[in-house]
Length: 274
Image (cartoon, rainbow, N blue to C red; front, side, top):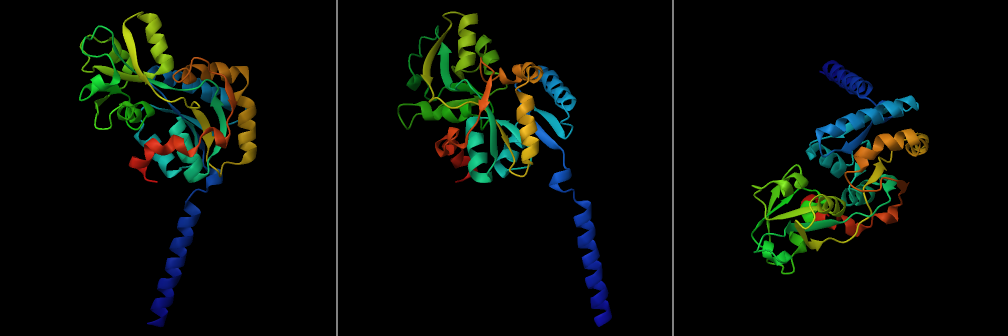
């Protein structure tokens, strides 16, 4: 019996040891750089960023163009290894909950607008969207989370319709939506393209814009090299289409922890927990 127990114990140790050897350490894993993208056309820009980073010697970095957000959001919620271009509420979450390091942020502030067609005779103010359909991006993007927080009366709420492109819905004659939640910089773009067609019903608070944030176990030397590369002209040009989703000006400035206070993550608390 003792011999059998000894053999079992040895086999258990061998199994545990072999599994430990087989599991890759964080130091040997590629560093995924996640860019959320609004359209498939931006995959080309993501590939160009990958090429430019490798040309600068950052072969460990693997650029990921995120078309569908579920896994991206889950990774931020859980604090998975990698670098992320993240919205202000996700950034605040990752910094507070997982001690991520801020790298750069887009210098232009970010805010959202709830708009409607000027030709709609039933809509004059935000409360007119009570029980109406409002197009927004997928949960849990900020525009989606802010729709029902925009109403003056707490019992009012909208029927939020998640769409891939709010801008496209605004141009569709048969869109199911009466209202549209969209970033201010896209709203201004739409207003230039279709003067007088839309009215602004409500706008959100002003946030510091999307930021590049890094997992705390990514080596400081790697982040230092990445910082120096991202401000080069070749990278700035490659990144511009990706950053233009969130700002008209695509220049980067240093991001600090205090730029993303705990108040930014409050819209997430009901979904991700405190």
